[in-house]
Image (cartoon, rainbow, N blue to C red; front, side, top):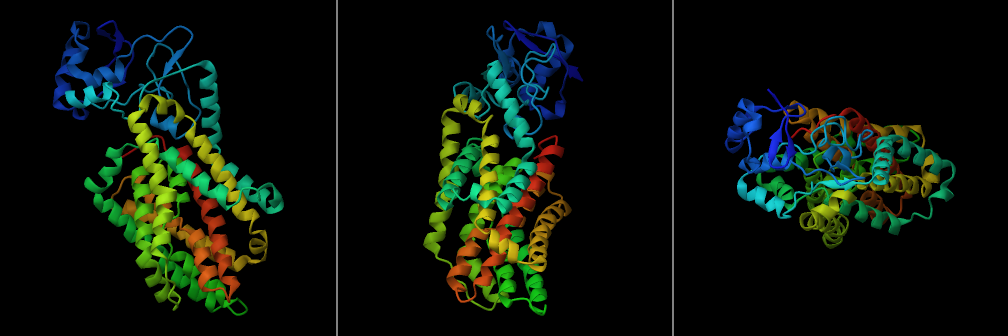
Amino acid sequence: MYIGIIGAGNHFQPNFPVTMRAASLPPQCRNMRSRMTASPSATHNPIRCLALNKAYYTPAPALGTKRTTAPANLLLGHGTPKLGNQGNRPNAGAFGTPSRRLACASSSSASAASSGGGDGNAPVVLSSLEQQAASFCAGFTRLFPLWVILAAVSAFHAPHLYLWFDNTCVTYGLMFVMAGMGLTLTFKEIISVFTKQPQLLLLGMVLQYTVLPIFGYFISRYLSSQPGLAPGLAVGVALVSCMPGGTASNIVAYIAKGDMPLSIMMTTASTLMAIATTPLLTSLLVGTLVPVDPRAMFISVLQLVLAPVLAGTAINQFFPAAVARVKLYTPFLATVVVFFIVGSMIAANVAVVASSGVTIVAAVFALHSTGFFLGYALSKALGLSDRIARTNSIEVGMQSSALAAVLAKVHFAADPVVVAPCVLSACTHATVGSLLAGYWAATVKTEDG
C-alpha cells in the first residue's frame, strides 16, 4: 500500500509515495493509516497520531532556505548526499527518503520529543553553503580507505610530516572523536546494551578473548620454530593477541556503520576485563606473567572512552537541535584524526617497520585478518544481524597495540625486539580495519538492527 502525505495547514494531502506496512505500525497508528487509506482528504486531525505527524508533517521552509534533516546515513558520511528538495518531495531527506524514519510512539513519548527531550534527530534548516560543505564532508569520508593508505605510504617515505602529531595529540584526538561519537547516542541506547540484549555484549567478550589468543598462540609457535628468527618476535605476537579492544576500533566501527553503543561498551568491558585476562593469557601463551596496573587501566578507559562519550551523549540529550547540525561534520573530523594517527604511528617507527622482515609482517597481518574474518563469520553463523557482525569483526580484529607496546617495554626491556610486533600491529590493524570500514561504508545501504 502506498500513501502520500504532506502537511498543508492542519490537513494531510497525498503528494508522494511512501511504502508503509501495517505490521510496522503499532495499534495506536493503524487507525490513522486505515482512515488515510479510505479517504486521505477527510483526515483533518494529524494529532491523532503524533509520531506520524512528527515524521511527515512539517511547516513550509522559509524563503532562501531548503528543508532537510540530519539522517543517520548522512551522519555516517557515506555516499554523496542529495540535500534539499527533490522534485515534488518537499520533505525528502538527504538520500531521497522521507526526512524522518517512521517511528510511532505513545503520546507521552511524542510530547517529550516535541518539548526538546531530544532523540538527536531534530530537523535542520541548511543554507546552500552549509549543504555544499556537508556534501563535501560526506564525499571526503567516503574515500576513507584512500586517506589511510595515503597516510601510511607518505609517513613511511616522509616521516617528518607527521612527527608533530605526538602522543599528546593522539590522546586528545581520540578523546575528541569519542566525544563526537557520543553526539550520535542517547543514554537510552547505551543502557539498552545491558538491559535488552546483554548476550551480545557477553558474546563480544568471548570472541575478544578467544579468537585472537588461540591464533596468536599458533602463530607464535610457528615463528619460534623458524631458524634465524629472533624469539622475541614470537613473544611480541603472542602479547598482542592477549590485549583488549583498542579505542581506535570505535572510530572504525563508526565509519563502518556498526552498532556504536555496543562497540563502545565492548571496548570498555574488554579493557576493564584485561586487568585479569591479560596477565592470565600472557602467562599461558608466553610463559611469563605480565601484570597490568588496574588503576592505570581504569584511568585510561575513563579518560579515553567513558568520559568523552558520556559528555557527547549528554550534549545530544539536552541540546538536540544544536547537535543535529554538528553531527553532519563529525565523520569528516573523525577521518582526519585517523589519518594523522596512522601517519604518526608509522612515522615514529619507520626503522622498526623497515627492519621487521616479510615473515613478521605477514604473521601480524594474518593475526589481525583472522580476527576480522572470524569475528564477522562467527557472528553471522549465530544468526546475528549484519550490523552486529560488522561490530564484532572490528572489535575482535583491532587490539590495543599501544598497551601491548607499553607492556613489552616494561616487562621485556632486555629484549627490545618484542616491541616490533606491537608497533606493526598498530599500523596493520588500523590500515586493514580502515579499508574494511571503507568497503562496508560504500556497500551497506541500510541500517539493520
